[in-house]
Length: 307
Ligand SMILES: Nc1ncnc2c1ncn2[C@@H]1O[C@H](COP(=O)(O)OP(=O)(O)O)[C@@H](O)[C@H]1O
Ligand SMILES: [Mg+2]
Image (cartoon, rainbow, N blue to C red; front, side, top):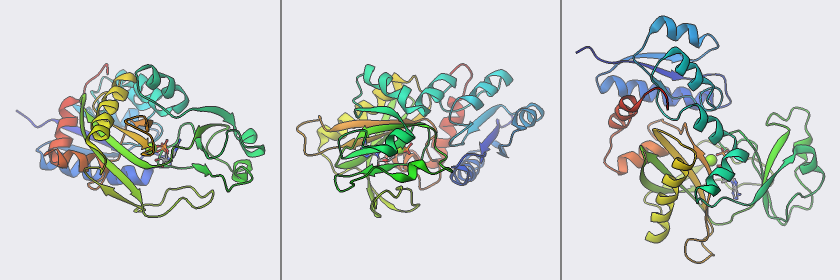
């Protein structure tokens, strides 16, 4: 039998292009090691024509941000009839839109931070929530455009009024959840382990957090087994609440000053999590005894239409 022909879709034109290129290079190499025939594609606006000519058996979607993470690419693959990895059209678009995802998560029994949608000018004029709180874009990733407003900040972030503000007119304001940062991956309806992410650079003032290499991963996360298992249970509940497929990764905050599991809240579900060899999902898979090649092969075999 001829080897399955896999198109690895990477790059694109989102703010997360560079990470995606690294994820794509790692996945393409792993797919080759696993015995697949691989074509690497840096996605541009002629992607439909490229795929129509190429006729791959499967598209391994390793894009981050738009259009690979928001359902647009998934819709195109449905129309072209090319089976693809990760979540489908609806789950992808809802998960990316945090204001729409939160009520669905809540309805699925997954606690989320209280908050509201505000305009960026409203958020710049006066404090929109009691401090401390967070202002963040509705549909960005990688902590881009996130502001933590502490009690020490007399005024709201003035960066929001900049004419070159690129993260939308509407923003999400949320109660700031102190404590730890946890993340858990789900692979086909089963939770992997839980990592605690410890930032090695602090959120200074209104500076956004994103600094590559600015964090340390603790696996297994040093929390009680009650919290560890609850994070795993909630990650699966979140995956199901948004009707996700394939692999996802849920981000949590855990306020360890609260009793029991009360302090655990879900920030978001990532439908296209990072896939470099040192990313969180491959690290969680390895911890569960699944090699990077096995993880990538699993994604390829799990690919389908009508997701
Ligand atoms: N309500 C919150 N309380 C505390 N920290 C938050 C909150 N919302 C976001 N953050 C911080 O900002 C980071 C990015 O937020 P997140 O909602 O995961 O968006 P994204 O990863 O898509 O940029 C989180 O990992 C966390 O460190
Ligand atoms: Mg996140």
